[in-house]
Image (tube, rainbow, N blue to C red; front, top):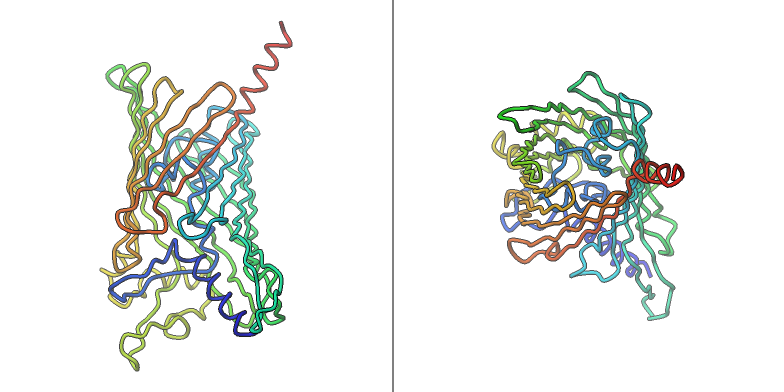
Length: 390
């Protein structure tokens, strides 16, 4: 029975990290963390632009990318639901659901929140004698709330608090392992400036978001603790109005996981360790600072721990959008490289978006689809008031 539990445990941990820590053929040290699902781009707009969004124009799904955008949103209130069949080429019943919403309190303040649920599917359990032991239903979720505020006409800041629960051993008959919990916070800022030149409107913006700053997570009652995916996202965007009906935007994001790098054990050449030599025993705040200079290969390897997202978006009459992007990760740090495509339709009250991934080479991410349905509650209320006046 213990043998079956061990196999299942390895299986679960593999599939929860495969999307963000693909094996490198070089044998280099790949930075990883627990609960990697918290770093998956949850919505179709960001997913269709190469997984970027820290400085793109404000929308309902800004909670993940940069909550500071909410105070610049033209609509007062909105809610959206996203759904992603995750790693569908490998597992038929794994999926990510994301519910997000916001409300502007006034011209300078906004509240927001989101719920992210990651279903890792179900597995039939058997003991060593082949006797049915029931099913396991591993799952993980996060819930967070944010507050955003304008600091000036062009600057805004935000904070968000998050609760994380990871129950990857759900249904497995063992007393040694349990669900892990963690608490985290995000701090984000946004600069956004409208420019009018040559009788055309344009906008330039820049943003930064340090997300998942929080306690380590443990599945062993505190005996062993793992880092959560604290992440630094920096980027910029530029939007240009081609004419009255056509608008084009470009964005660029840089991401770095603020988790200590694994080190090479000099006593056993080529073996990667994730404990003492890997600085895994330090606290989460110390780990953030260490992550900027602890790569075994020095400064150049630190640079290779940065992923790059570049994307473009075209809008026609603010009703129909097409998007594309590219995500790049150096080969020695996971080698995720893929193109993304997406489209969106915006009506008076609701919006519908989807995105699609085309991987550079064989990858479990190939063919990943995301769907997002959004509702502009402010516009809904306005239409309701018009009907009442009639």
